[in-house]
Length: 237
Image: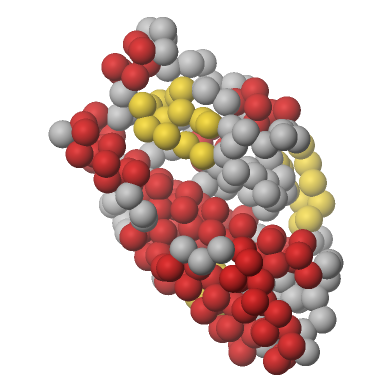
């Protein structure tokens, strides 16, 4: 059974598409109009203030999720949307298109993976989660320090530090069993890091954000999604 679960976890996530498709489309003026966990139920592009622009971007992101399109292909759609709507966006074209593409795909994949990891059969075999650093050449020191960290799936750490934990963060979580821990020379899960928070002023509100996490990422996309869309479903952490 364990091998079958591992194979299922490695397959493309239908749940990632389901997560994305259940979102309501929202127009915004700034990126803080939809903040943190609200992103698990709302699709927006900062500064896309008309329904038509939001709908076009939504279609491009859904295509990327469903068909596996690349950033180069997404940028063609981005350029077309900007031209047709005369949209004046902040930041350069490559930077802005990358932010939209990466953030939406990574949070959808994270939510999809969370849905798979919290399935009862999966938790029975793999009761632990391991933090994996992306291998970035310019890593955040906290993300690098968390690399290899193994905690129980119901550890509170995962409520605020489940990756992605910031803009361009490529970190991810993998499932681990007791056997996996023994292979790593561990007798049990690691001790959870102390969660230290800092106060940030974001969009006129005061929020508490863990060190090592960018403002707006201090939530678990899958947990926020499943706790509202599926009462009684497996939600750990």
